[in-house]
Image (tube, rainbow, N blue to C red; front, side):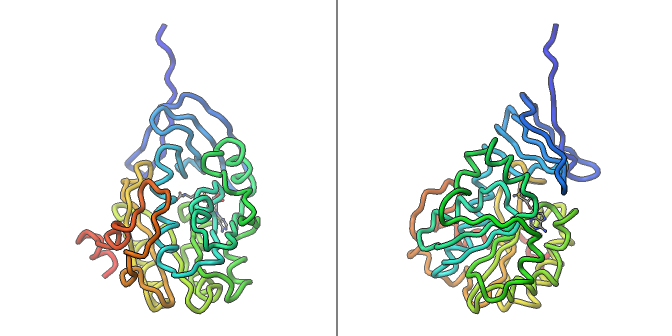
Length: 278
Ligand code: SAM
């Protein structure tokens, strides 16, 4: 008798699915905020899924986590206090703590169950959450940012797609609060979805940030399990321009995607992406 095959599909657009063969369902839960699953996939290893959307996988997580962490941290000359909004799997905290000058990295996550499941089932990604330089605060990132002023050198918004509690993380009021939560020379980066499927979102976010921050830059990376593979990140900065830094001064750290040669190249945009943010 043929063995039964199990497949998981993320519906990436109303007309497109991304399908992986599953060898095991490791864990599922309905949290206060979302449906959570950890699956063992044949192609990408363990996979964290929230509300049917792939968040991270063991095989390609380094692409996203390195891109969202090292570009801002190597743009700021002395990042000591850093906050991650969302990011409950811990991958961004792991990358941040590779920077020796970081004294404290805060994880501001709304859903404690994402952190607990990641610690238990994805230790490769969550391994730095118990580091003494890391502090986890369970609260809504929108509330946290609006209640704290002049506090961080760098803020990284590692959110889910703009649904449920993450909707407000893509709005202008939030970016204004992020501006005020940063120190006078602070900067921030947010993941801003796919240039193929989310052009209106990228345009709106870019122009919202541009109306608040003196320097606004968009950069791209490739993340195989995210919709279309091509992914965008938007930076708002009060003082430091990622295109003006001296890349010869970037320290070599242990990475698989990011490197000093790539730092400025990531900001070179294909014409169709330039047009989105014109
Ligand atoms: N890298 C992933 C991606 O781009 O799809 C995101 C990973 S991380 C698991 C996203 C986290 O953001 C989730 O754990 C979710 O609970 C959290 N989140 C969503 N809205 C939030 C909010 N308003 N405040 C804090 N965390 C939030």
